[in-house]
Amino acid sequence: MPDVNLSLPESILALFAGRARAEAILGDLTEMALTRGRLWFWIAYARTLVSLTWRIVLALFVADIGRQMIFDLFHLYIRHTPDAWRDATDSWLDLLNSTGPVLACIMSTLWFVLPFAAVRYGLRDRFVQLTFAVAVGTTLAFLAIPWASLACAAVTLVLAAAAFTSRTWRKPLEVLLWTGAAGVTMIAVSSAVRFRVLALLVHSHRLLAGNTFALFFQTGLLVLAFVCARMHALLLDKPSPEDRTLA
Amino acid sequence: MNPERTLGEFEQIVLLAVLRLGDEAYGVTILDEIAAKTGRNPAPGALYTTLHRMEDKGLVTFRDGSPTPERGGRAKRFVQVTRVGRNALASAQSAYQSLLQGLDLLDAKLFGGAYA
Image (cartoon, rainbow over all chains, first blue to last red; front, side, top):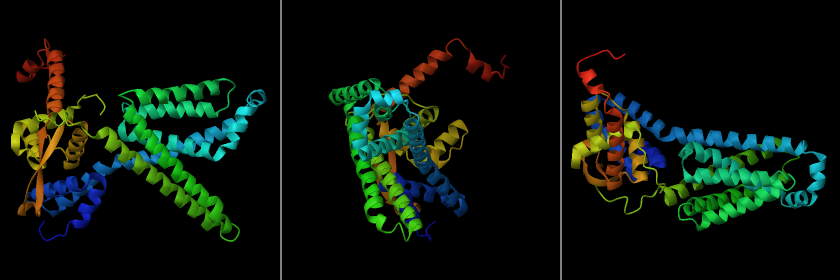
């Protein structure tokens, strides 16, 4: 394929595989195309690109669906909370109501990251397992069930503290903390844009305001997924020097 | 790093091909070796995702070669099996050997015998 400029296909590949890997892949495909032809090259390139990206695309899709589903269920639950529970947990509900936006940010982050990471890395990944425990514990704590929610909040905090002191679980916790910080920031910024800036446009340009917020929010989720993937790659995927010893 | 080193079937095939090729293992030669020894023609994308995953797990490592004209001036990335990768492969193969013992499966295939 000497007469074709492959810098753009290589750049697209590099977005998902990294520069060095993309260069090697394009080199291999170019070498094989010498005996198999140009059509084979482009089909092989397209299939390679799909192989490298389908899991990320699926993970993003599942994460967005998962986050929306949990929020729908959460709202359903809030509307049907027994009155007796409300009376018994008034102070807890007051606390939650006063921290409503923060709560929404934490919930959005956890229930977006959990399905994303589960599809991307599999259920055996320690980061996925830790995120699952924290997401379930936090959600139960937010449900304001008498005593059970307080117990869940305490257990989740103890779990996080135990993970911090554990050699095995500390790095997954670090990934979760970085991802959580990024998520809360992203979602808070997009919400702030919605409530503060776009409020000026709502009356005259309601559709534009809604779409702009959706764009901000979805972009925020993409950035969140990117931070999660980068931190996972940096802290958990990186082989130790001992692992790199040749056979 | 997660401690699990369980290998999938295709990971084992790729590691065995890399070990057979020695210093000449890179994308093109690995695909050729797999095709020659197993009769399969895996898609390049399947090989690269597997190699990248194994690199992330510390099972293989890479060293850069020199750029060549037939590759459009791009360098080869030679694959090398790490000690962890070799141990994982030995463990997986040992498990297969244990399960195969007493089954006469290979003999039956050699003689074309029908298996009830």
